[in-house]
Amino acid sequence: MNYNKIAKDLIPLLGGTDNVISATHCATRLRLVLKDDEKATANRDKIEELDGVKGAFASSGQFQVIFGTGIVNKVYGEFAEEVGLKEKDTQDHAEAAKKKMNPFARFARTLSNIFVPIIPAIVASGLLMGLLGMVTTFGWVADDSSLVKMLNMFSSAAFIILPILLGYSAAKEFGGNPFLGAVIGGIMTHPDLLNPWGLAEANPEYMDFMGLDIALIGYQGTVVPVLLAVFVMSMIEKNLRKIVPSAVDLLVTPFVTVILTGFITLLAIGPLGNAIGSGITVVLNFVYDYGSVFAGLIFGGLYSLIVITGVHHSFHAIEAGLLAELGFNYLLPIWSMANVAQGGAGLAVYFLAKRAKTKELALPAALSAFLGITEPVIFGVNLRYRKPFIGAAIGGALGGAYVVFTNVVANAYGLTGIPMIAILVEFGTVNVVNYLIGFAIAVVGAFIATWFMGIKEEDVK
Image 1 (cartoon, one colour):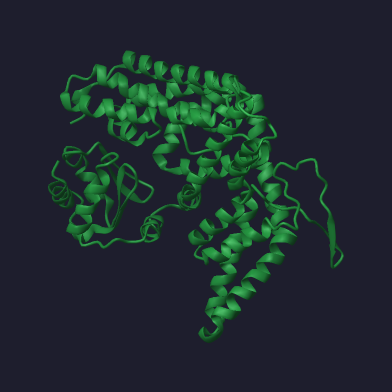
Image 2 (cartoon, rainbow, N blue to C red):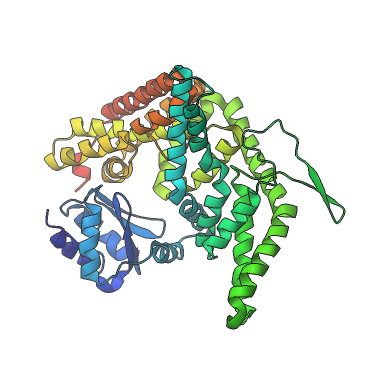
């Protein structure tokens, strides 16, 4: 594959070098912020015919071209060279993209930018919890052994310091100093405050502050309080920098920012944030408990529609809240059913298709969906033929209903498909078995639905 030729052929189809504002890439897609998206959209069919391209679409203020893992980074290198873009900070690209979004999409993108960087830490903790569960369940070592104690420390660390991780990431997104954001997270998890993580039955002490009774309770594992606190911190810091003379900025701005935000956080933001987070959890639990199978049908069937908009990344905030409040995540298995159903529909397209290029694209794209990467099969295959996307929604709904009915839960977020099995182990063999049954229902349901609806290759050039 000639990556330089692909880049050179792509540029005029995007409207030329002058139409490119910014560029970056993720694991599978070349992400472009263009002055005029219509120039690229008008040439979408030609772009999709380029060697290595698996699909192209405009979403979230960006025009995105799907190449797949291992290819996109090489194309990006050549593309950046041809367009004259130097390696830019992702933040610059994100800001350029957000300027083209509506307020709701901007909010969703902001949450995504905060949570996506910390997914590796949450996934690692989930896997370690799974390992700890296996060690204790199967009695490989004694419950009071040093190995169990160390694994418990390793697996819970990310959730205990979650406000610090979020503080750093959120401050970067809100335009504040990330290290000051981490300090605010540190204040919220200070050892003098009762750690509620695993200490739900303990009673906090209270202190009298100017006639107010303030509970000495920490915010380990919480999400909403630290996001609110760091947002306020960033606003305070940015406004101080406008009025504080440069000569004393290093001394005055951090000092005033931390002390003001600290007081506001412990007196008001923390309790308010906890109330908001608890309210969200109560609403979700109500839908989950009383909607039951119906809730799984709706969530599993509609999730892929949400993926198209890019808003799904903002769900990480909700899932993190569930982990903090309940200790498990019941939404991720539903999302996983929707994702693997897209793979099932893509597999049906592979067997139904007569064109070699369609088969060449459908099979690897379907397999990637089973591993949790759905963009190639959604945008490159199922949406192009429309009916397979509907078939995938049917399969996702059926699988979602089953995992809700059987109470399948995970101990982290960020992994779907086959890799997700590793973060289900902590809750026992039945949890894993029911997940695999739901997996099969979603894939087979999507395959059958797509098979009976069929595809018309002549409708796609």
